[in-house]
Length: 177
Image 1 (tube, rainbow, N blue to C red):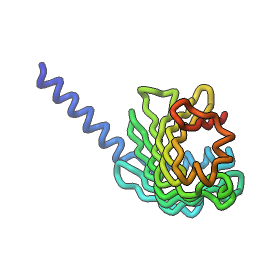
Image 2 (cartoon, rainbow, N blue to C red; image 1 turned 60 degrees about the vertical axis):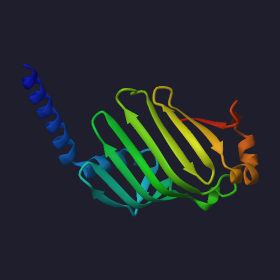
Image 3 (cartoon, rainbow, N blue to C red; image 1 turned 180 degrees about the vertical axis):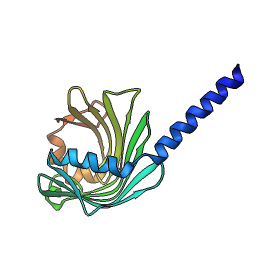
């Protein structure tokens, strides 16, 4: 009996892995891009690469409402059935934001899982410091807890004054989506 159960679980695992590997990730990306375009968010000049279990997007330019907002060196999408993640590396914000925040973001990591289907969580670090991200999908709110770097504290303190101060010395940015 145990042997049959183990064999069944191995078959299910193999089927799930084959399904993820052979899924049309590029088509899923184009569908998502079409949905974001309706909201005014567009990625241009990107190069797509299906890596089996992941989809890599390289050298993309992000436009929000026709304004160039950021240049992104690499985006890695992991589309698994129970656990999905997005890794962004080499994000450089537009020069328009240089008066408010540092422009270089080293990495951004977002996770969506079916075990917590109402939230997207993430971490980010760059010249500004470190940030913990929480997106509530029901309330449609974004909350970012920023642990500022020395550069952020000295050169961009006016931006930090507009944020709520956390009891641990961090700053909280909240936005409805």
